[in-house]
Length: 406
Image (tube, one colour):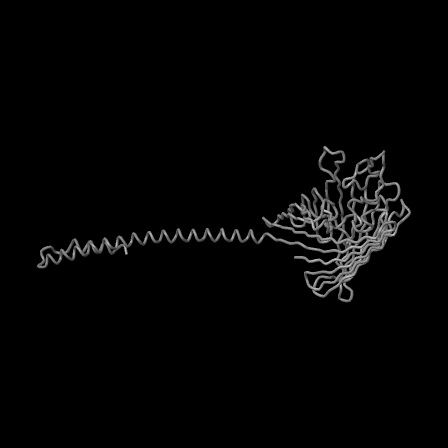
């Protein structure tokens, strides 16, 4: 295209001026010059169009990158939760029979801003009980509280090694999901570091009972678990030990002026914990398949090295089946014996024997899943409270649950 103007100009300049049709030649010359100007104009327009097309493409690419970035960020966010309605009845020696209806609602939002980082915020119903998010219905249909249940970060330092901080789920392994030491609703506050390899695992934690040093009962609990995992055919064995230190002696209650069965020392109206809790734990769990159904067997044993007596707790149990897929079921049984100062009562199972230590007895559980999201459960506690430090009272508690997960 660039040679055309040169050709036109050459023809225009070297046409003979003395030809008979000189005026026609002049006319042709003028037309050629006009054509040259038109070609140059078209070339300029073509260059401008190229620039505009390039700019448009760059803007389109930028929008695509931005859209993809937003899409990736959206995909990194997940929302989950559950809703449970519960009917309960109580039959306790020396007390009037009691019934109540409760609900539990939990909502958690998780984000993964990077491949090795997770942050989460969770809200839940209930009051400030550290081991329960149940909300009793009543009060003339009054509005109910929603509280902060989770607020944490989780950073995978390297494959198998994870650091968690904030208010997070309990990092310690609970054989069979049992609450001998830790209630299932407990959210630890502090830092934990967990390692999980092919066969070995280690869980460590440093958690606040009270972080404000202005208060007289400011304390930090810390501990670790170490265990071994082994796959034996279709069976999986997990076994290990743990140690947890809670300096409680001489401290006032951390929640609701209640010591949950632990031994206290009182001067007038002021009571404090009588013992520290240096808890040594041994545990084992076996998961296998029987008649095409999952079976879990577990044992948990703990002794408080600081208490002079009433220092031991243990639990044995099993769970058969799994209420997960539609029209599936499960059944479980646990027997446990918790002496008064074996564990910190504040953090142990809040349902067994009303949440107190110095208790023993049976727990029977069953559940059926009509659909993948719904589960109907029944739990019955046949316990005895005040076993060593009191005369011993029968404790019966029935729970009927309707739960939905999303």
